[in-house]
Amino acid sequence: MVKRILLCSPERSLSRFISIELQKFDYSVDFEENGKTALKQVREREYDLILADFQLGDMNSQEFAKEINYLRPATIIIVMASCEEVQTNQEAIGRYAVSIIVKPFVIAELLDLISRIFRGRDFIDQNCSLIQTRTAYQDLRLDRKQHVAYRGEELLLLTRREYDLLATLMASHTPLSREQLLERVWKYESTAETNIVDVYIRYLRSKIDVPGRPSYIQTIRGVGYGMRE
View 1: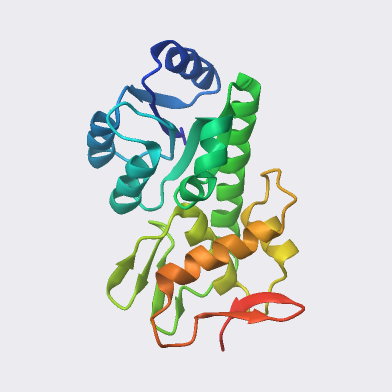
View 2: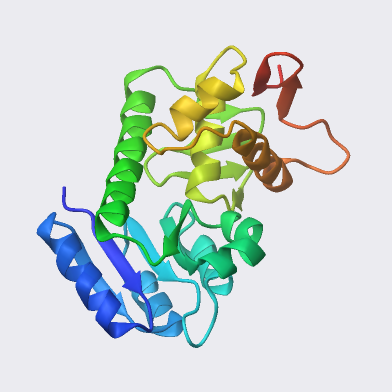
């Protein structure tokens, strides 16, 4: 199945070059110069991945990604940013984007990143369909087809990374170490920092937990994380 990519950047020459290179690898690519027109596209059609510049002219990528997370929470977002923008906005970008690529970059680096992200998502989807994966836990429920989660009847606005992490935890009937979660959720992406797991567990808890009630996700000292039994 052809992967659909939306490229959003005010830099026309860069976007044209990236589009040509992506199409060489059989990706279907749409291009928009600003956030508002890109959001209109997202409302009208589904994309497998959105590649957005940090500055979009009419809004920054954080505002753009928040809107995407509301409209299409399962969409993968990669942000292109300068080194200075990453240094001052990394955590904020990381709340909504699956990955950040620092400009200037070699096109092969971007193509490799996109390929690894798609392979990782396909692995998670195939793995969940082949095993008896829990799609419900207490009042949490997963929709594996749409890659979204519910608490009761409420749609939880999880990013694709947060959804993958929750699905992986629910799929396992035993606690998982940070290394195991890194391998399963970040499978083909090159990161050796296990503390990124702790960061995303914190993000996930902030969205799924109910104030005053124990967290759905239990920290098991010396082991890692698991769904609270």
